Image 1 (cartoon, rainbow over the protein chains, first blue to last red):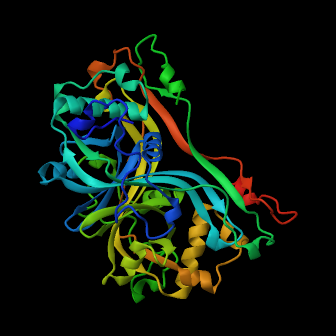
Image 2 (cartoon, chains in turn blue, brown):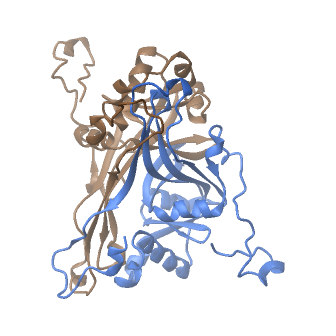
Image 3 (tube, helix red, strand yellow):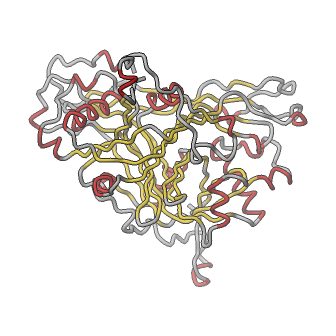
Amino acid sequence: MTARPETAETAETAETYEPTETYEPTGRTVPTRSRERARYDRATVHAILDQAYVCHLGFVRDGAPVVLPTLYARVGETLYVHGSTGSRPLLAAGKADPGLPVCLTVTHVDGLVLARSAFHHSINYRSVIVHGTAYQVTDEDERRTALDALVDHVVPGRSADCRPANARELAATAVIRVDLAEVSAKLRAGGPNDDPEDLDLPYWSGVVPVAPVHGTPVPADGLAPGTAAPDYLAAL
Amino acid sequence: MTARPETAETAETAETYEPTETYEPTGRTVPTRSRERARYDRATVHAILDQAYVCHLGFVRDGAPVVLPTLYARVGETLYVHGSTGSRPLLAAGKADPGLPVCLTVTHVDGLVLARSAFHHSINYRSVIVHGTAYQVTDEDERRTALDALVDHVVPGRSADCRPANARELAATAVIRVDLAEVSAKLRAGGPNDDPEDLDLPYWSGVVPVAPVHGTPVPADGLAPGTAAPDYLAAL
């Protein structure tokens, strides 16, 4: 977690200073139901964000909602998303002043929960919902940092083992940032919550675990001679 | 695919009648970029929808976007989502007239695409984006059909092998429907698209396949004696 001193008074203790261990709940981040599933601590939120790399980015266009899957990366208390300079949400984030309101959601499915009753069937999951404003990143150093993070978020270590973006590629790439401020996690874990009167019913009940698995890497045609699969792929 | 005769004239050929094999592209479903990745044929869209069970449902609340992960099921040309009668989007779908504008997105990640250049890194994926209007389902037969479909969409065959919802549970459950009309799929497959001048660079390039995998089912405590894991779990 990045220390983020907010004032000069705290700067001297920046290395160890944590302004707060939790995100402040708001009207938008307190769920109307299953409040016991909500979490606001940064450690839980960061862990969920760091394990995934595809989010669903929501914004409003012509009054209607749009939800697009896209890659993201976290750097400290900021999420970065990138895309073509011609993509609609990225254009909108550049044009809008002050920024484009977005909702960015990340979800892991961990298991299928089968209860004796249809009603208590459920999913074990961990999700994070970020409400905020997307801004185009124009600072070139921050853009480079974000683009490296986007590569490393998918395959840790990869950004140092490929050709960096050149000027033309950088010019074609838009980067937007969303600060982590109005944020909540929500999660369900464990077995089914069957009603006591259903426990003797003759139906199997339990959890089927689910997890994404990486397969054997498939090399592209024409790799340069001697180019072996790097160690960071095995670490996936 | 469900045959959907639209007029009396076509009803006599309902069993084989297909009004169209594709969804009509609209301004919202034609992407601004990577148009070669877009698909509108129902077979592709249905296959992507039927393989997943968690979607990301977007709607607008107080002018801002909200994106929630939720279960869904497809029945013919309709998607169903359910939840507590107290949940915000479901309440909104009931109150809004004529319905609640939504965007419902389903995404499969199939592979990590590592190119010689950072710029050409990508993800192999298949996604469907549905723009439409959510309506509360009030017809009891349709509600039952939808709730069974929601269980069977996650675990095919399960709805017939658990206790059906009782009157109290049905009263606590809201069901919304979104018809498949303004729909597109988008997909990327295959290897990296490296620039020709990068092919001799000494970086590994290729695809790391990704897929969700089901683990060994974990039975709940206190299963009734003789309750074995059903065959439909093995079929997952």
